[in-house]
Image (tube, rainbow, N blue to C red; front, side, top):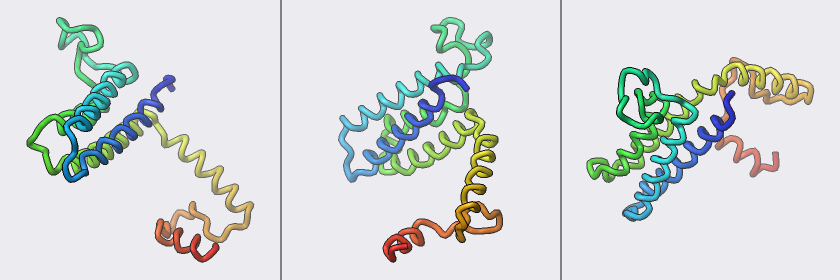
Length: 160
């Protein structure tokens, strides 16, 4: 895996979360919105370093090298987020759009990182560790349904 790609994913998720928070305020300040437009725009440019444009020979020959070709669809949610923060047509719905775009970005980026083989290996390791410890509530039993965060909070409140 190319160094820096996981950091781009983490940075994107953090920037989305913070921009989403600002946009959810009753009246987000134009300064805050401008800051997050700039952050996300810079993130899109950084993304071009790790997820290169495609079909460079077909489009944008008059542009600088980094902007030749078509942007990867992996970066589209970031560029769309900048548009949401920039366009008054989204006012009042910005947080909802940003939340949906963040989920789409994480989903797309997980495909770039190719996490499935790593996740399968990790699940096997966790299952082995859990079963050795004699735990009754093995989270990796394939037919089980996770108990959820509320059940976990109740267990903590009860002192486990």
